[in-house]
Length: 376
Ligand SMILES: Nc1nc2c(c(=O)[nH]1)N[C@H]1C(S)=C(S)[C@@H](COP(=O)(O)O)O[C@H]1N2
Ligand SMILES: [Mo]
Image 1 (cartoon, rainbow, N blue to C red):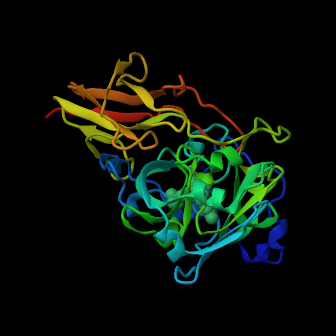
Image 2 (tube, rainbow, N blue to C red):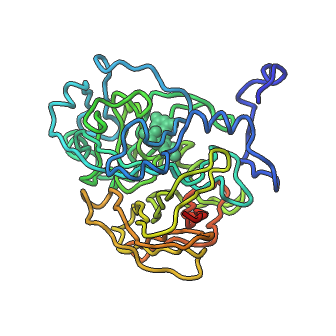
Image 3 (cartoon, protein in one colour):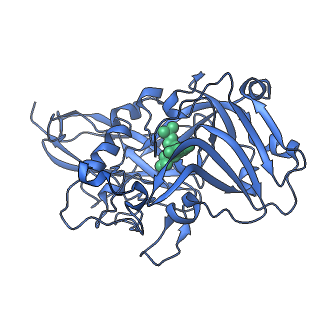
């Protein structure tokens, strides 16, 4: 934790250079616990809902939730455009209205399971949610502004402000022009049929179906079109898959396939170990991928010795929302290790070994749920 001694050091000198890896056996620090308490995950039993209730959806907020007023908030569109625009929220609401179910997942999901462990928001597997986002499509707005033929990146700026590794900044993320012009991308002002909550980006956020969470800029107030690659921190430094500190890495973009098991039975309070009664029961959970629709989910109950196909429910809305899977089993008393493994139409599947990188991004290694089936 920060002590009084730390306070006379300028904050901008705090942590420069690459992110740190935890020492072998090093626990979660007070700072990480502070982040984890602010940025909660979905309770895994909430995988039962097709649409995640807003309060159970995971949260990731890098700095503070900014104070914004929907009545006076504006969105500007500028940079290399023929007609720079400024729109109020009321004007955005008068534009065509679209609702889309979209699975959001933090790129850091799975980070705390890596070895060695990158020190940051310590997600296990719960940084995911599937909400209904309502807003207006971005592409027509960009076309009205008239983006230049030599445009490369579109930068989205949020109203939140902070410091990362010594760099003071607003939260900003860019998308390549072709991604920003995808018809599915929304300027969203509602979540699950209600105005956005402060923690989810009120009054306006970006929704980029298929991409990891960092692209879905909250508290959005400015869009700027550039003729060169955006070199801002969150694109050029933070969200990259690197093997070591000198590796320039490649950008983190779309969500890798993942299936989660809704833990069966009931938990022990402290250990969280699962206990189940013997007999027929249905295992279920959710599966998603940002690259292509999920085409199969396989289940193991013996720690990966054998895998069997699960049944996939019909998609509930488009290609960017998770799908339920089910698997019937009838366990005898004993110990079981459950996993589900999703494969998508692009052929991507989940590894059983960790896909390690220095930032701890996109770790879609299969989840493991230990269950003890006790006699009646
Ligand atoms: N302005 C702003 N937008 C942001 C963030 C942020 O800290 N500031 N966090 C991003 C990250 S890393 C994720 S995973 C998602 C989380 O969205 P949620 O909190 O609505 O689930 O928001 C993204 N958009
Ligand atoms: Mo994230």
